[in-house]
Image 1 (cartoon, rainbow, N blue to C red):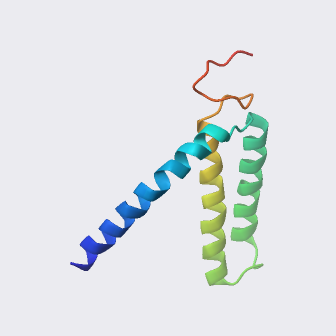
Image 2: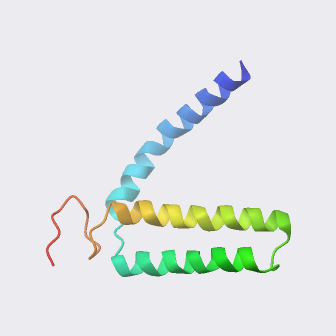
Length: 94
């Protein structure tokens, strides 16, 4: 019964966030260069996090999670944009 209640809560949250996601998709445009820089910095940060002891073990895990989330969000935003930053709904013309 607890699992069903949790699924219901997540579904309800998703329905409330749907308009916000739609608005963000319309407003946000990401150029290819911005996406590339963010992804490369994320890759560098992942490597530094794995190779050094800057963070404790539990902090390393959360560091990986946060960096991966940032890279994922960046990738999703870039997916809906042409390389010049215009909406992907419009055809891309160099």
